[in-house]
Length: 292
Image (tube, rainbow, N blue to C red; front, side, top):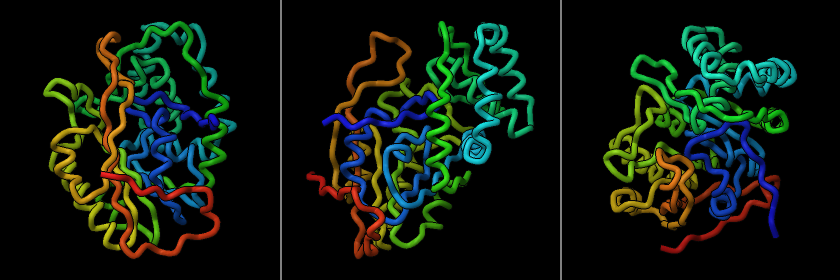
């Protein structure tokens, strides 16, 4: 039976919409789902935990989410005005991008972030070393305005707390019984594959290894942690203490459209040791043991 999935209102390189059916098989029940790298929020939008902690290092993203959470009607009306024919030309896009980069007003930046996301190339979110958004114009015939998706996000966000912290801080503040899903920037498949910079701080191989260590530590404290990443020899090494499952998925971003083939993704599950009791309100979420 096909179950309807809820789409995020942002286009997102590496978004987990297509992987939701597989991911949710491996997320245990619990009182709260914590996402240190929430991105577009497809896992949040397609699970049913009593509470959520949604974190990302991208301050623009978190500000946007908080504004949609509290001012959905006003935001939808204002954002819709930017989705018109006169705004869908390269000169307008570059002017709005400049306006975004020079603005310090959270509400204006949130409006422009959505505009840039839907009008920019391939839904990329990329900043230069000076912290300036630098994604080129996408040249789409008529960018989609995600009104229904914005309202659904706003409704679901009433169960969420948003934060803009490091992943280390998020792990340090886990509440008893919390389930953690980590979707970090992926390990590059080749030396040339990592062509975007999502945040000025970056996310290097030391961070990848530290995240795996934090997952092991959280497991010892009664938390189940699920991490997704590219399936490589190196990721299998750093996740060797986890139960691993590999799945084939289509590429969502490619410099060459003809090169959008299948890539192996790895799920690493660290099941909780002495987990907290599951609350009845978390019913419907299944715990599945993954085979090596």
